[in-house]
Image (cartoon, rainbow, N blue to C red; front, side, top):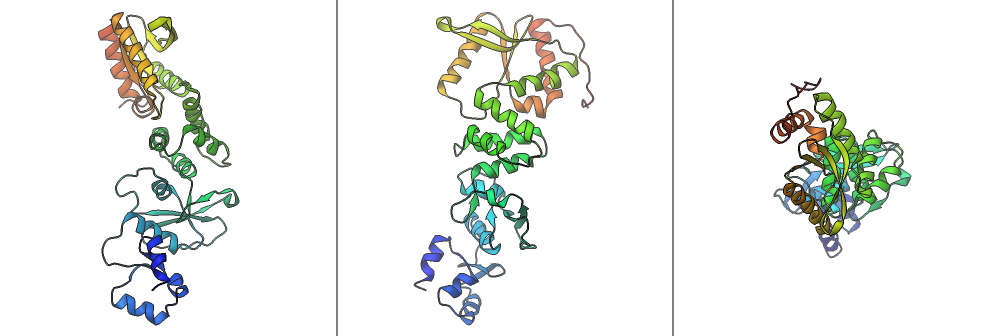
Length: 312
């Protein structure tokens, strides 16, 4: 057990049959330890040193040991890289293997994915896993809709374990992405401080399809100390819509500037509302109805809203 103890300590109490034999145990020793419940099988040839529920890290180690040559991916890689994941997100552990590998299938609680471009995959850590950037880009590209893409990117950036810049570089270096254009556009906006993805989405998903008046874009205003600022969308009558495309790394200076613009608008008897990706790409019809109500209340708009093809 002298050779085995460091292995168990390094792997959170998970161990493979191969490692047990390499540490000097014989097959009959392993069988005896299982009978005595000193070892509990998790997957074929993979054990833990207790009989209770597995911790998340033990679940990850067991999956890694069970899939020879595999690399932890998806939520597993994010978790080990320091990104918080939802409870239950690791009930099924994603492991990637080379596209040409047979991979081990049928393991309870393990999803094995084959991956092209294996030679370019950067593997880090112990157990071996994808970088946070690669795992996040994978998850964003597999999201069910564009709001899911934004949600994946937001979670990763807010964790402060990566940045929009690093995610953008990773996406640009990936040869196959289903949602490449949208994903790269969102990240490029965040990096440059622009909101072109949101601005275009607000115009084409909220304003135009629902018959709302088209506001003036990028209206220059003068703030404290004579500093120039630009309001994203301004409507006649005093309603300002600010499109906020940040993913989470808001600086105190940036928030302060936002509050200055809001206060300046209030002092001029205008009303400011802030909109982000969820309102535009997740709930455009709902958002349009609320904006229409604001236009009536604040601006005295008396036009008629239209139902778009997605309105219930």
